[in-house]
Length: 455
Ligand code: SF4
Ligand code: SF4
Ligand code: SF4
Image 1 (cartoon, rainbow, N blue to C red):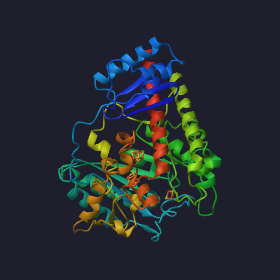
Image 2: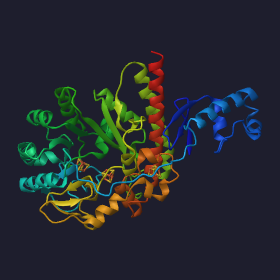
Image 3: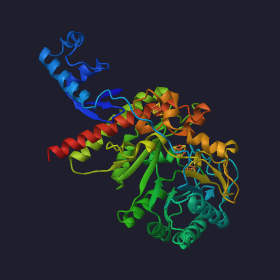
Image 4: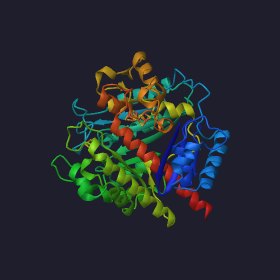
């Protein structure tokens, strides 16, 4: 299977099974669009006749010869000739700790129903967090590196629990041959200087939530009294990143149908001084006024095009910023198992609620049908673990013929479930956006390679 597209002025062909990416002249791209495997040595007459009004016969046959060379070298129309055996058991390596089922904002698109997951406002007591750390040490087997993501709601509402949990995990990691790595996701409202210094000392990564321009952010990221949060948050985030001194962080936003011009929000983040950015499409019930629906896709695609051009321009001028969703590894990493397995929720990754209940991930928290067990002992429900374990791109019928399958890994099971009632059935809008982002990301790689070559 080969996917051919045009982005940033490049004709790009991607050979799905080998992962090879080719930048093609116009004639080669047009020839390739007409080919089906197996290729033969000489250019078929019907290809020449179909393209003779656009290109000379020599241009067509030369292009064909180049493509045929790629075909012979196993970089075009390759077939997978090996089995991908997914290990059936994975130790847990990452916990999303729901420190607070409470929040000091009431964002209008919040999947957690204003922070409490519709289950009542709660802060995780330290005893639960401590049990969660013991739980992950036990369930992680021989795996050494363990990720803990302090999440909410707003986790800084349970700052005391966060601090005690870090202290506890650090105090026992050596004796258990573990290495904890902490991340915290915050809306920033409670970031005092003391909190900033603490996070900079203890958190390997910090995710800062902001939706971009003031009017965009304040239309949706509002407080309990329905006022915008931008002015209260941005100076804190700027100060925090300044103090962070190059350690990992990113500014994470959400775009909705109300800001389909989201490239402006990414640019705004960059103008505020943030170089690590992410703006994700909201996924809501189509009846929500903020939902991204089919009719919004052309505008969203055009905006990704625009963002790609903006990023290319920055790169050309020797400046840079990362847009998380345009980051793609084309050098065949991660391994094929990771590529088909995806996020690992319900297996390597689970979420723990303030009561100590374990769910496949934060998006399933509170959905009783998906409760795996608790951190206080007892077995986790193997049938649910198996269900998520099987949720690879190889098991999703809709993904079989999708050119993006080894990058997307079959989409987000939570989005799939919420949209279609089935973790194996991809959410169509997310698929469309994912494929578009991937095209942009690949084109930016081609652009970078060009820049390096001409350096
Ligand atoms: S900050 Fe997060 S948890 Fe709080 S209301 Fe907004 S989206 Fe929901
Ligand atoms: S984009 Fe959609 S169809 Fe393609 S691999 Fe991802 S989930 Fe499957
Ligand atoms: S199911 Fe979706 S939200 Fe949950 S961890 Fe996987 S990708 Fe993330």
